Image (cartoon, rainbow, N blue to C red; front, side, top):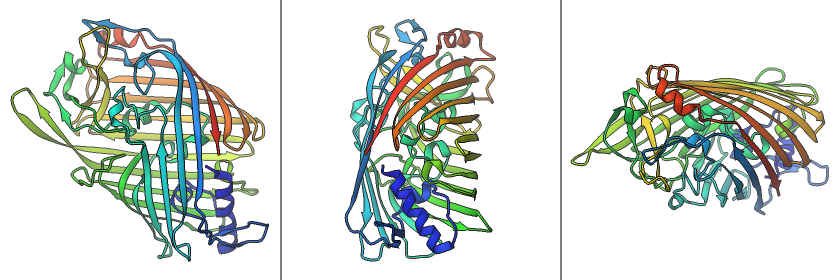
Length: 460
C-alpha cells in the first residue's frame, strides 16, 4: 500500500478541518479515502475518480529447529512444522502477494470502495495443506460518509479488534503472529466435526473437544462480512477518540450470506498526538484501546450414526496501548478468550508417510484462555535500521488441569528498510511450551524448538 501518501492526505485533511493534526489510525486508513490532498503543495478537496492500485509481496525463508514425533503413524508435533501447509521444517515461500484497489465512486467523495486479492501461500489459500479453501479474495467493501461522526462501511473487511490483527500486516517487522493471536484470534472456520472427545483423544483434557472432519474454508484473516459504524473525532487538545461497532455474519473470509454465526464487534481508542507527529506507522503518539467480540458458532457433530448440532459461544476481548516517539516504539496488549478454544492441528491419517491435518476445539463456554505481548523497537538509524524484541505468552485451557498448555515466545530481530515499507526483516524465535498438569503431554511438547526466519517485503 502507498501508506505514506494515504496518511499524508489524512493528516492534511485533519489540519484543515480541526486545526490540529490527527493521528493516522487503521480504521481511517482502511475504511475510506481522505477528505483533502495536496498534489502540488496546495491543499484541495479530494475529488479524484481514478482508482488507486497498490499492493505488496512478502517472500520468506524459515527453518524450525524442533523435532518430529510420530506415534502409531500419527504426527504429534505440528508445532515443529511450518505454516500454512504443515509439510516441512524449512523452506522458501511466497507468503503474501496482495493486489488492491480503492477509490471514490461519486462526485462528492461520500462513497468510497476498497477491494483486495490474495495470491500468496498462506492460510487464505492453503490452510493446513487444504488448497481447496483458496478464495484469492479477502476484501470487498463500500464506505458511506454522509453522516458526520458516523461513517458506515459494508461488505467484507477487517473487523475492529486487536491491534495486531487490525494493523496493516506489511508494516510490522515481525514475521509470525504472537501465540495468543495466532491460536485464539486468527479463526479457523469449521462446521463438520466428529464425535465428542475427552481424555487421550483430547490431549488428556477432561473438557469436551471436537475435531473437524472437513476443512473447506480459508483462515479468518481477522475479517468478516457485515456492516460497521465508525469514526475518529477530536476530543480535548491533542487527544482523539476512535470508535467502531460492527455486526458481522461470523463467517470470516467467505461468500456465505448466512447469519447463523452472527457476531458483534466493538472497539474504542483514545490517542494523544505528540509534537512533530510524523505520519503513518511512524506517527508519534500514545494510544490506549479496548475491544471485544461476541458471537455464535455452529458445529455439526457426527458420531458415525447420528448428527447433532452444537451451538457454541465464541468471545474474545482485550485491551492495550501503543507508544511511538523519536524512533522508540513500545506496545503491549492483554487478551482473553472463552468458548471455541482452538487446541491445535491434529493429524488424522495413521499412515506415517502422510498427514491429514484437521482442527480441534474445546467448544464449551467454560473453556478459557488468556495471553498477551510486550513489544520494544528501537531505530538505530532513523527509518532505515532498527532492532526489536517481543515477548508473548498464551495460557490455553486454564480451566482444565490436564488440558492446559502454556506457550512462551521471545522474538529478537532486526530490520533494514530500503524505502517506505520495502525492507528485509530477520527474526529469531525462542519458543517454549509447558503442560503443567500432564507429564505425557509434556513429553510431546519437549520436541518444540526455536525458529529462524528472514523475509523480504516489497510494496508498490
